[in-house]
Image 1 (spheres, helix red, strand yellow):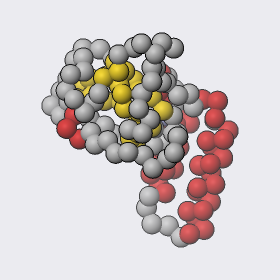
Image 2 (cartoon, helix red, strand yellow):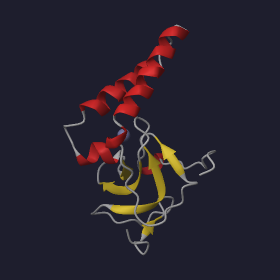
Image 3 (tube, rainbow, N blue to C red):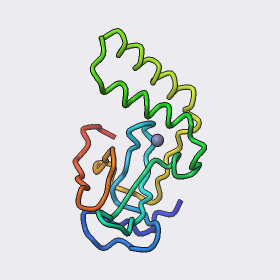
Image 4 (cartoon, rainbow, N blue to C red):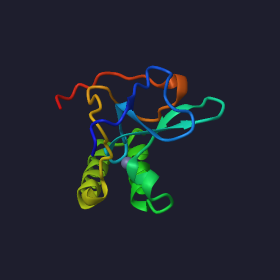
Length: 135
Ligand SMILES: [Zn+2]
């Protein structure tokens, strides 16, 4: 991929309003861990730059595995006995291992991996924090 593509800094408000574009920041899917710097603009109330899992965006409607994994991660956030949590975590790890070939990063150019964020991003709610990871 070309390193000369323009990467827009999402902390500034100068990104395109009518097309997908590439960002300086990197989004990490909180479900499968895929990384992307593909962003688009949502033109609505509370609109703004949006980013999402490259897997979900590429095969809309055919991501049953991803939906199931998201549900498991959601269930894991509720209080459970330690043994249940442990089994659920093992299930999630196994699912990620089995489906590793589906998790494809979508990075173009040379984004700033220290500005990595998970979760839902949009408009004024974008908050970028420096990741603790060393990569
Ligand atoms: Zn994902």
